[in-house]
Amino acid sequence: MQRSFGKWGTILMALSVGIGAFGAHLLEPIIGDDAIGVYETGVHYHMIHGLALLLVALAVGQIGESRKLYWAGYLFITGIILFSGSLYVLSISGIKVLGAITPLGGVAFIAGWICFLLTILDSKKKTR
Image (cartoon, rainbow, N blue to C red; front, side, top):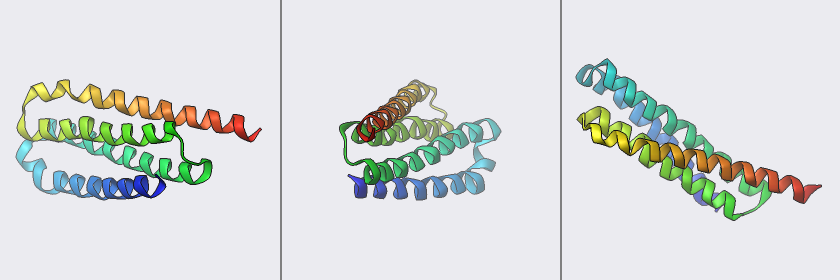
């Protein structure tokens, strides 16, 4: 689990940098200021949750494998796909209905952080 989330985290971080650079250098003049703001929000959350995956990988190394960490990692990946992915496509295509998918990604992010919190709280009980 540690290697898997570590690999996912590093790949998603590299993609966030590449996608961000693509938006800043190539897309901005094409899609305009409003759309680039939506795109940048996608990149921002993508990057934060790529780092969150790396934190999950480190936590597995420190605390050990757990179902809650497993779910935290996969919820972060799901959130990046749904939240950031929908914002990328929305900003480039202008298809407004994709905005309905974005909150599902936000819920996945929140659920992932709750799973991570529960893991930390459970680990304190075990070490006391």
